[in-house]
Length: 384
Picture 1: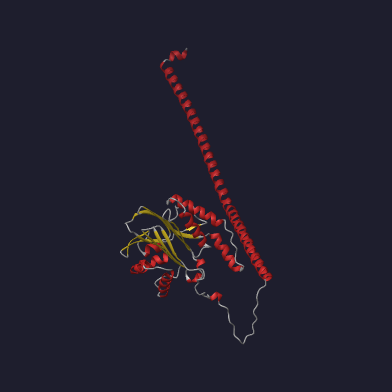
Picture 2: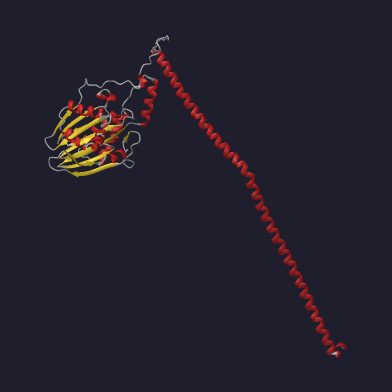
């Protein structure tokens, strides 16, 4: 495995030390890892560097080892002591970024007997080149697929691969294979302009690579971003790095917020520079303001809880008379029903009693009538 590594930082970074793309090559295990730290997160270049080195140090490339390497990298990053900016406003922004964690994408490849093992999280890509053309690419086949991917590893939220889009595949390579492992910006460029494959193949030093990037930055075909290409060829185990030297830097660009305000010459002005004591005083005021904001926030939460309790109490006070009234009506209705049942039983009892009396009277009448009839038939018995 013969590797050529080309890198250049985006112009906004000025110095190469600020590049957020990191790579690591282990010739012994034939493993290559590229990680792209995200611009928005805090010190992502350091986290990306931990990722590449830890993954490349493993003898085997599999999901279990990658997960272990990610956790080790997160721990190493968490043990770093960061010195916040002396500028209070910038320091607050840095604190916010630290709280949300550092993020990075990664792509790791290991070649064993012309078999490529690939694990990828995020928008880096690998191109298989044949006859100066793209024969295939992984994990993305076109720019749209690449742009739809938004996975990355975050130092605060990583808890496994369940919530991430992880690509893991084994690919059979031909003899004399040629591969491009690329960060996202150069991957988009190669998808859009596949004819430029030959230009990349012919790169032989850093100056060629720098000229290639600056030309395509200028004509708008290449994004203004960190650019990383690792060209892997079948052959002797060697690593050739084509990187900027320590003295190289891009021209510093002053953004609007950094441009010094030049007032009207007719207006008398006086430049003031804060002393260390004034800076400390300002910093203390900002901290006090931050504490006051937290205090007010907690007070508002307590007030919110109080309003909820009052609302529930009021609701109960409104509903209680209705519940009591409904219960009273139910009890009255039950009592009325019981009373009605009792009356009906008493009435029925009286009716039954009257019927029995009438029946007795009727029987007595019948007996008297029978006796009278018998006397009429036997007058002798009557005389006796």
